[in-house]
Each structure stands twice: as C-alpha cells, then as structure tokens.
Length: 210
Image (cartoon, rainbow, N blue to C red; front, top):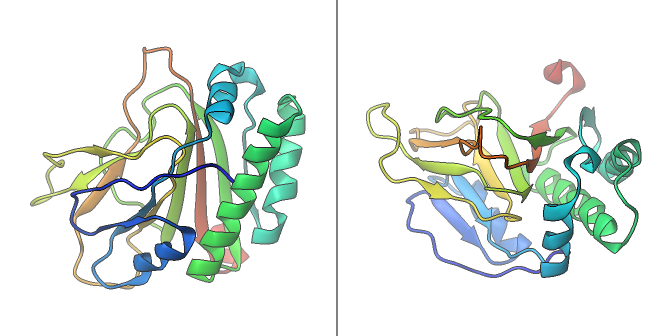
C-alpha cells in the first residue's frame, strides 16, 4: 500500500478521508465526492514517473472485483512493465482500491479502465452518466474539480494529488438536490506529459454495462 498523508480541502460537498474506512462519508447525504488523501511512496513515484510510456499498462474490461488483481497483472505482462517491487505495488494497490470501492458501493461488477493519457481527454467540466466512479492518477496531474454555479464552469478549481483516489457521484446516483460538483481531466496536450489514470465504475449487472 502506498504511503498517505492527510491534507485539508475547502470545497463544500467533498469529504476528505485519512483512512479507507473514512471513505464511508461518501455515502452520506450532500457528499458529492470523497478523496483519500495520501502521498505516493517516493521510490514508487520515481519509478512510475521515469518509466517508458510504452511500458505503462493499459486496458478496458468489465469484471468481478476479486478478478482485478489478476487482470492488471496480465495488462502489465502485455505492456512488458518491468517486474519488481514497484510493479507489485501498482498491481496490489489497484486491486485494493477495487475491493474498497466495490465494497463501499456494493457493486457486483466493475468497469476498469487503465489508460496512459497525453491529450486533453475529457477537458470540459462535467458529471458522468454513471452511479459512482473512482479515479486515481498514478502518474502526472490529478483530476480537477470545482462547484458549478448556474451551469457555468467552476470559478475555483481544485486538483486531486497524484496517487490520491477520488470517489465521484454520477447522474444516476439516487440523491437530490444536485451538488453542482463538476470535474475534468487536466489540460496537458502539447506539454509532453504522460499521465497514467485508473478509472473504476460501479456496475450492478453485466447487461447494464453494455
């Protein structure tokens, strides 16, 4: 497990978790998102930041939560991600996040996306047409978010720290009123930066995911 630290966040409706157990705040009324604030272990971060982008694992798959670790291991094998303790940390952490997220949301399946990003994908502030999502950026800038007023882009923009998972509610979350929290990927096109982003979506039934 990666080392973590607790920091403050001033955005209304965003819970800050010091431990995985604190993420239960995400289930409370009025909570649009929850962030487990932690710092990546220095050795791990240096390894993944300097890794050849062609060796970063990538893939999209719908699977049971308990199958995530094996699936990510296979993605690393396909990408020829170098073997070693850092790769084991990455695989183990993704598996642990899948278990935590699925247990919290009571999801039978997860839609997993592990993706190196070099462009301005999802550059517009938005809310996803899902029930709930976990996003963790292992390399590069983290997800940006803020509170929208009258449908406009947020005037104050916050960034999730690298290695810190954020849980986000989507439009299918059964709660009202809307919190106004929007998010986007940071605009990095043309900077030469390569991000590695993990996305986990809660899926109740396989037919719902197609």
